[in-house]
Length: 434
Ligand code: GDP
Image (cartoon, rainbow, N blue to C red; front, side, top):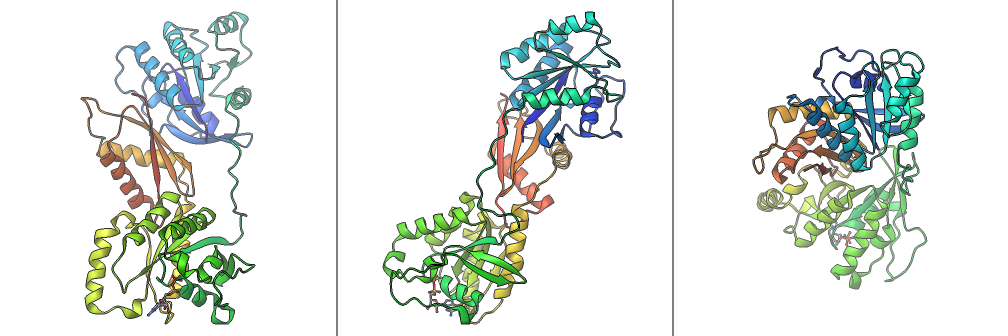
């Protein structure tokens, strides 16, 4: 989603304008410079186009030199935003501070839309002339308080937004069956599980190596819904020779993952976890697909092996501790039905979108309690956050400095604690204004 930042001197009506645009009336608006706000970023839309609206008014707390402060705010905003909505107070006219800000904005080459606030009718010629002289194009008269002119202003903002990126070609036919890849190293029990899921009557045994089947994917009804299992021909076909080769196994897993939404990684509990198991799991995480871990051959597990298995899980699977686990036996059918709720959980997390408002009030509390560590004598500030994408959830933090790896991990951990995301990888990126 594109970002629109609202910039301007304190008290020109930025927050009222923001509230007007997002259609919220109850928000705090006081005629006091530097009124604090809960949130700085909001989900907004106009004419069906969605964007994130950022109120930069909350970015500075200490007012030391108004012009410098606002200029800095504008600089941050320009870094973070696709369009700057620059607000001036038409009842005051253009001030030195406004001019300083315009200089900053011009150097950043971001599109600027100029709003002349507190105008209850058409602009007076003299005022209009003064505003045109700022050199950022047509001034749009608005009254944030009464709503007048905000439609035209938003039309101008939309026109300045970057072209909408064409939606990624996704295989997903909305509402169609969800796509599952059954993966794991050879002999973990993929084809046994597939047969178990599909029902014995539908089993097709290809005893001839290299036999091709028409249906590469299989539709299987489980728990009252239809699932699409990807590349089942590759599982059913007995390429024993090729399956032994890592290269082909990795390639096959890669193509299956590309088409899948969620991966079930099978692990064989009768043997130690192998490097190849870990690599398959990493492949899933890197692909950004949702994940379920299925510990198969549970019927072969005895006390002793179980003890070691738990150690192995602790030691080697910490990185995916968020993935749901099912302990199954493809041979006996034990707990195979538990796959469905696990798949649903992971896909639900994968699809999750947190609203910008909720995300930022959460983040504000988090940062207040545990600020980012000082780095090179400077305290990096997190200006706001937005969830840029789903499948998997992708968050962008707009900051004034580099956030240490540890701190980013901390944020991810807290995101998981507070919002769930069981079974889905999370992407977290930073956009920094050093
Ligand atoms: P794939 O290479 O991953 O498709 O694995 P297969 O499904 O061909 O299984 C490999 C071997 O493990 C076969 O001999 C299966 O009978 C056996 N196997 C699969 N699942 C189980 C299980 O849950 N318990 C036991 N005891 N054996 C299993």
